[in-house]
Image (cartoon, rainbow, N blue to C red; front, top):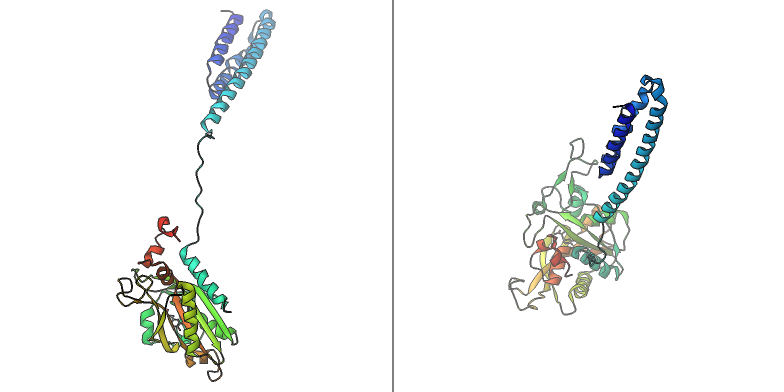
Length: 353
Ligand code: DAH
């Protein structure tokens, strides 16, 4: 076969392969095999020197024509394949605009945050400031400045997690002892009395930690709202009136309040406040364990020893304090039988509020 015929045969085969290529990748393979550095047509161009002189001009011309033909066939086929590949891609990723859209659920505030804000609003409305404290606290503020020195039996009920600093030492600043996760927001009382002068009318919401195992009425981590009033001439009557006002605002005008004597190291006298049961209205039911009352908070008149830590003269000033659990208030308000339900993250439950 003459070189001329060989080239023409290669032309025929190449054009057939181009027509048969069904993807741009396959087409590229044909191009490389024919026109690439070591492609079959390139080989003829390279070996021109070895072709007999008489033939060289005609063969050269044929090779160039064939190359041009192949190039244009490649370009045409590439265009066609690219277009159909793009179409396929678009079809695969297409959105069916006739389908109904997905409804985005609106988020709601968690009941715990809502009740915290409600409590804050009630007290803000009667002139209280809203203070904040830290969840990591020193032993001094969590216990000692609240008249609960080391070895005080009341500490036993509020054993907690101690935080160790990088050096491994648990002693913080001289005079203050260990660093811990606070067990109560009452420490904010001590901070506020150190930094503000009476009259003080404040509440302080925040998270606290206990070594309790979660059960229907206990959580190892929960929220409290602390209250503190320090002014001249504050009496137990002011405490009672304030709590009654709070209870009616939070639970409704028909709810009654009663105070039961109790012990807290930082108040004297101390009491626990109960609210008449919202389910049986005081008749006695399972929710209130047959008593007609449910406990909502601890309170009392600020102990003079606590004033002494903050250099406030108990002969001039008196005050009251209280502390309530936010989760407990939320459950009492909506008759939820188990505190843990607030933390399960079950949207069917949480969306009701
Ligand atoms: N800190 C107490 C607790 O966590 C609650 C409490 C009781 C706070 C009496 C007070 C108070 O301010 O006066 O159990």
